[in-house]
Length: 245
Image (cartoon, rainbow, N blue to C red):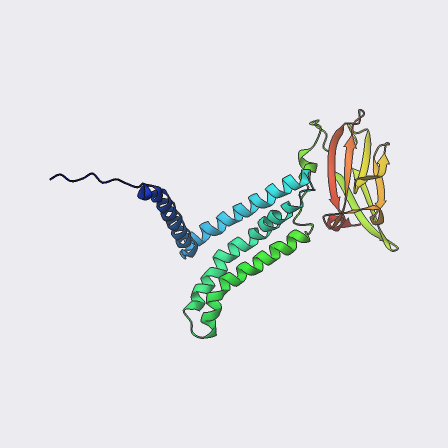
């Protein structure tokens, strides 16, 4: 009497990749939790440093993209995330988690606070990201376009601006440190020209009432142009960051 060959339905073979994937995900999650809860000084410093660099990457990358296309308003949220993560990441791993572990060894309400502190801080962080992404502040937004865009010519005068109160308005006076290679200066705000200066040494005065708000901040752009009308240099100035004269 011989044994009959068994036939495989293929169900086990089909389940194997799924089981393997679940196992990989489970192992990755366990590793992530192990790293997250690692409480040695070296691990805390490494995690804080990693989040610091990740936050810088998100903030700078979002700013660069947003500088060139301000219609992509959703970029303000990763921008806010990265900006806040610069402070939140180190504080969370160097202060919040060690304090949480210490409070968990206590009794009563301190133990409850220790158990809920990390999640509570995370909720506050995410709410702050939503608020700051919806209402961005000047310190969070940087117009990299003014730094990255130029004609390539070796012309880089400094633009000096001061502001002063004039009645109910604010007067902004600006001048260039040198005028070599510059044929005209165009001051723009909100997509409109508010001042054009064709005569050296290119000093101009504008008023805050002429300056439009961009991303919640009053700002204007100063474009230096050569004799062919080509862009030599572009500067962006926010009223809140201009010194009082």
